[in-house]
Image 1 (tube, rainbow, N blue to C red):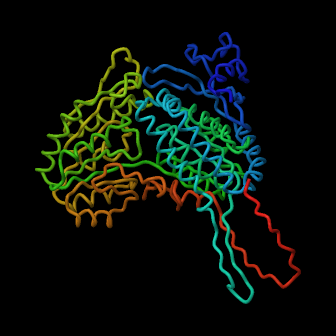
Image 2 (cartoon, helix red, strand yellow; image 1 turned 30 degrees about the vertical axis):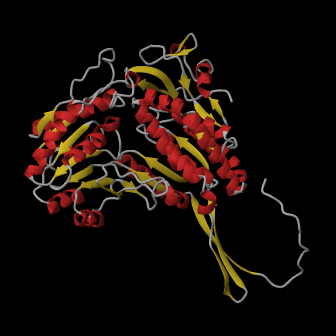
Image 3 (tube, rainbow, N blue to C red; image 1 turned 90 degrees about the vertical axis):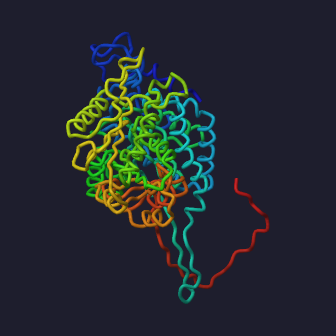
Amino acid sequence: MQNAFADLVVLSTKMQGYSARERTGGRAVTETGKETGKEIGHWINGKLVAGKSGRFADVLNPATGEVQARVALATQAELDHAVAEAAKAQPAWAATNPQRRARVIMKFADLINQHMDELADLVSREHGKTLPDARGDVQRGLEVVEVCMGAPAMLKGEFTDNAGPGIDLHSMRQPLGVVAGITPFNFPAMIPLWKMAPALVAGNAMVLKPSERCPSTSIRLAELMQEAGLPDGVLQVVNGDKGCVDAILDNDTVQAVGFVGSTPIAQYIYGRACTNGKRAQCFGGAKNHMIIMPDADMDKAADALVGAGFGAAGERCMAISVAVPVGEGTAEALIERLVPKIEKLKVGPYTAGDDVDFGPVITAQARDRIVGLIDSGEAAGATLVVDGRGLKIQGYENGFYVGPTLFDNVTPEMEIYKQEIFGPVLSVVRRKNYDDALQLVMDNEYGNGTAIFTADGDTARDFASRVNVGMVGINFPIPVPLSYYSFGGWKKSAFGDLNQYGPDALRFYTKTKTVTSRWFSGIKDGAALNFKPLD
């Protein structure tokens, strides 16, 4: 199989819709006229194709601030064509028995393992994650792929013999048809894999629209899926912006939409998809709290907060961004332990080695927004304990870096508490007792994840039972369920009835049909005595 990323440079000489101003010796140029070297199109019917819109977005290297490629932004016509081709390919794929579909997924998992370092490098170059974190991104997606190998057992229906006189009942789970995934920049491998693996193994065709900031990983995954044996057209990758999203939502052939991103966009997509008669599961923002009880191991709690608050530069929907120590003594002990741990964190580009703790945020605009929220917290009277503003890395002065930042004495009225910062900022909100701490979590509009650190089993059980949040950690800071459970938040963190991956994913990507049958006596054919194995 020819490598898709070797072809991307070739594509730059073939892209359609270019004006003379946009060409420089056949190489892509940015709006400032700087050559980028390659252009990224779409993956349609098993091959890379050039975009036709003449519209492009820059793909940046967050570590350096440089433009490394341009990605085509699809028109509605291009999206509709991808959907129509997927619809042609889907019936034959759905008719393939589940075990054979699972074999494709099995081979795909093997190829991901073989290309783990390559995929991690793609993630790091376009997102800015450290290489260990990027490998974790791929690995957590791979774990969902591995669970999907067992889809034949999960796709089985039910059967009742003699439900009535000579009457049998059985149900079957059937694919929806063409479905769509709209995925964010912060997990360029994991979330596309969360979407494509269950959708495809269930017999659907999928049109995937990854973030235009990190498009390359999805295209490479599509190439590996084809190498694993997926028929052409069953997985299409279409790059685009809001116009492409709206085209997905308005296309009558698309039966379901899965989305991960911010809450306002999740609400928009969920509303428009439902209005158009589609299934939708849309996952939005978060403001995840971790309660620290007086009996908690403070060193372990501080270690957990540093990892959960600053890993991936805080660009995780499951990041802990609010620490809630119960009691003044607990707060003082926690701050005392946090400060030296935070000050030792190493920030830098992914190329600096595996000892880098986290890298840049995704864009200059994201960096400026985070800095603005830090400014607002300081102006509102929160205590700025560790200030990450103004961080410059030698040799990478144009990268989008924000250092680890710690606030104390934050109150719920402050913008740094109310907003999802999506950056390396940890806020400490002190509470006098457990009930006040629990109420703080329950009153927050988001309900993605939460955690409590305590040595008391009664407190832990009470917290897990009462808190109105979808994923709960007990002495565990980022409670992302393993891949054979399901991932999903509550309140304004999720819209839709079914969660991502695990059993819920196969329910979301299939519909149930129930058959009532009665057979009258008739002529029976002779028996075949040979055993015919499944080929």
